[in-house]
Amino acid sequence: MKLRLVLGDQLSRSLSSLRDLKPGDVVLMAEVHDEATYVRHHKRKIAFLFAAMRHFADDLAKSGVHVDYVKLDDEGNSGSFTGELQRALGRYAVEAIVVTEAGEWRVMEMMRQWEAEFGVPCEIRPDDRFLATHEAFDQWAGRSKTLRMEFFYREMRKRSGYLMTPLGEPVGGRWNYDEENREPLPAGVEAPPRPHYAVDATTAEVIALVERRFGNHFGSLDEFDYPVTRRQALHYLRWFVAEALPKFGTFQDAMRQGQPLLFHSHLSALINCGLLDPRECCDMAEAAYRDDAVPLNAAEGFIRQIIGWREFIRGVYWREMPDYGERNLLNATRKLPDFFWTGQTDLNCLHQSIAETQANAYAHHIQRLMVLGNFCLLAGFDPKEVQEWYLVVYHDAYEWVEMPNVVGMILYADGGLFASKPYAASGNYINKMSDYCGKCVYDVKKRQGEGACPFNYLYWDFVARNRNRMARNPRTSRSVATLDRMAPEKVEAAQADSRRFLDALTATGDY
Image (cartoon, rainbow, N blue to C red; front, top):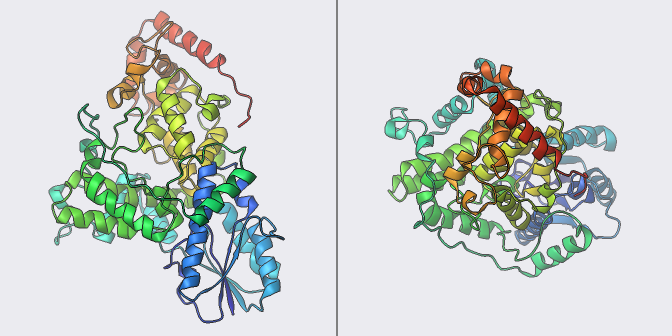
């Protein structure tokens, strides 16, 4: 018999390690303390994954599969994947272990040791739920002068055929409709009501377990209503395509106070844990476009996030590991302030984004990049601390997707490996794309002095600190030229305001 270990982010019936299941094989699944605490994950993320794991195991068992499921509080639970495999090998006469490759480097390092450690053959199969293999990405990267998602995305469009004409051209004549994805949300436009999923007995048991064992972790379990089954995930996908996708393209960069989801899919956690396959998400979005149910900018923008950005980020992670997370080319060393854990800050945009993250373990990509990430970049927070925060707080965060987004996209800590510029902005961008600034104690129109929006003077302080690097970049050289035209006393005032503001932040390191 073969022992097939399925991880918590591998909840797919089509998983490579499950394809040739035979009678007598055993599927091992385990809730382990090490994975819940290597960083102190958001309580909602732990509950989501454990509930999804238990439902997936139940579905396998109902289809006749022998599932050996170890709950977190089962007697004898060793707390680690390696320990649970060791215990399972004591329960069964196993001729081989079969696994699908892990998404994170540290778990892959464990997998590579198992054959020698247990004295049992361990077959590690590729994770072909992704459209691009590691080899295919590396071959593309080797042919490219620079790593740019846009060019990788075009390659993926050609390979997959999504939104392509029979002649091999992009539908509509353009590869990318990003310029049509940046409209602020007009006052009269309302997001559609979302489906909510009732907590059943299985999920209720998990929520109680998480509150009991991880009650001091970040976040809230109140009003838990996530889809945690394959059936619920498919329902949520169909709802999104029918109700939210039509306006997602136009308003995907918009933010509105008290409405964390707007027209966003909120599907990333379901895709990343395996309840949804990325291909079926793209298939459904393309079908809706072909049926004239959604505009091209919406379908293209959604598909680009999946076959472009998601695949690209994964490729960068595996190509640059194991030391990618150590990079800090801007020499940022400031400690992350306590309000990232409490949400207690007078900056309304940050308060809204952090409070929504506390409640939902979710914030959409503009909140993550241009509010929270922009602030981290301007303030010069230590990349290691920022990486840990992003990994802790979001229910769709795994190291393979979190690390490149933080190191490369948010903090520019790799010096522009794949980002064409640092994504630094003043308060004007947030004011344009949200209603946050009108309800803030700071004046977004004021650049300096008491009451000025901190994003404004922090931006010019950032440009001054990184002047030489930004002057060499065609996309940021205009900001340097503007800085050089500013009166010296204005530059000095921005730097003084920045020192005053940043020195007043408290950072105990507790969360």
